[in-house]
Structure formats: structure tokens, C-alpha cells
Image (cartoon, rainbow, N blue to C red; front, side, top):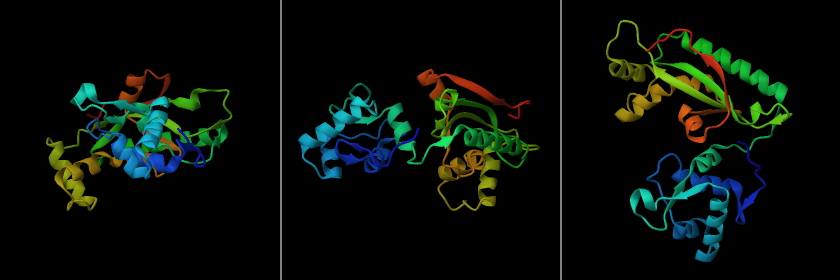
Length: 224
């Protein structure tokens, strides 16, 4: 997903809106209501209601009453999560997209050969604008990636190995869960290679949205 940095949502700059909704993305217990919007954007409650109306119209937020019994509270929907992850970057040609995708898949192959990593890439699916063959200019490449634990040679306790890997990566001073997550995400950092046009998603996003997709890669042998 790509956004135009010059757009405005409910009269507010779209980048500021994206920054606000990021506080409520990725976890259903992170919620807000009209008064929070008013304070953040320094507007009246009436204007805040209009801004939230725009969020609803775009499908970016959903009520949480049924989940937590909190009336008037909202959180980010799946579309909202996609929006906050979007980048204000210029479109790319299909030719460049093909090159970036080829380079990405090469990195996947290379990463899967590295036995010191605690995880590996099992599958890669592509979805989104790339599958529209009529589109000449594209936004980012939406890739659903299935990353799994690797059976580390000679080690039975993967958690213990991940702790050791955290020391090697220099993050052993961070909280325990943060260390493990950092090690688990190492594979994704390597295959993304800081490229702003590569957008990684879990396979659950495909299942939840029933989006059309294409399988690009499957590991030849199981490593878990």
C-alpha cells in the first residue's frame, strides 16, 4: 500500500493521521475514543467525530464493544493496520518491481542456507497490486511470508539457542521476550534488506482477507 504525503484526512495531514493510528495498530487492546482524537489533533469534539467518521468510511477502525465491553472505543482494523504500515514513496515501474522481487527471492534462498539462524522461510506468497498485470506503475510489493523455527543441528532446545544467538547479535541486555523476538525476526530483517518497497505480512493476512495471491517460493526440504 502506498500513500500520497499531500493527502489530508478530515482536514489533517495524512502522515500525522498515520502516526496517530500507529499507536493502536497490531493489538486489539490498544483503543481510543473521540476525546483522544480531539486532544491529539487539538480540535473540538465535533471535529474529532468528523475525523473518526472519515476513519470509519475508509475502513481503518472498528468498534471494540463486543470484545471488551467498552462503549465508544475503537481500534485499528486490518485495513487500518495496512494503512499505518504504508509508506509515502513514489510508485515504481513493473520492470523495477520484477528486479526487486528477483533480488528478494535470491535473499530468501541465501538465508535458508544459513544454519546459524534460528528460523527459516518456508513459503512466500505475493498479493496486492503486483498481480494486476494491467498496472504499469506499482506501489510496494506485498509479500506474505511463512517463517518457521529451524531444527538447529545438534541442539534440542531452540529457546536456549535463541538466547545464545541474542548474545551474538549484541541484544542480550534487552528484556527476555524482546531478545527472543529480535532473534526470531532476524530472518525477516535479512530478506527485507531495509528496502522500503518490500512489505512483509504474515500468512494470516491472506487467510483473513481471502486476498488473491500467488505462491512464489516453498522450501524444498523441511528444516523444522
